[in-house]
Image (cartoon, rainbow, N blue to C red):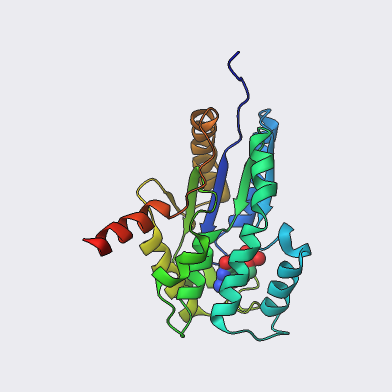
Length: 227
Ligand code: DGP
């Protein structure tokens, strides 16, 4: 007998600080649940902050510990890897995950630091992670984001760094990303995300999970090096 088991979709919201990701994640989960879709909210490094690695990241973000830029980069990545089993289990149960930040933030924020870590180096530890079915990039000029409440309170909330983060998101952007002007109203942004999310959930429910983040690019690089 053919299995009628369907999987949930991995929907990711990415972007700089204060672009409205958390609000949009909550709105999308509420909308999907209201429409009868099993959906849950995850955030990095959020729910997974209870782990030893998560606590180290918290202490670093709060400024109570200092770490080498490479060391904290690897910890952020390890925090994603330790979440994989939980995420896979949820997706395979048919639960759609709406995720606030992931490896793209990981690369953009680390590469944006003055120590000048390359994009190539930053991507390495996340190669082979679960690949999102939909990436929504909430994009807005940094000057507009700084006008939003409480900007400047966290470690990375500096205008120069956020500008470089935005540039790195632009470099990481893939052709199938949904790019949203995050200066629009909450409702307008929500409607665009919700419409795409519903389409993606329908398309990917019978497809296997994609555990190959940045893998193709890495294989292409290897072939190129061998030529
Ligand atoms: P948030 O709780 O989403 O506001 O994230 C806290 C800060 O941590 C934010 O400035 C972005 C940054 N951040 C999130 N994920 C990563 C990551 O994987 N690597 C680095 N270097 N920074 C990250």
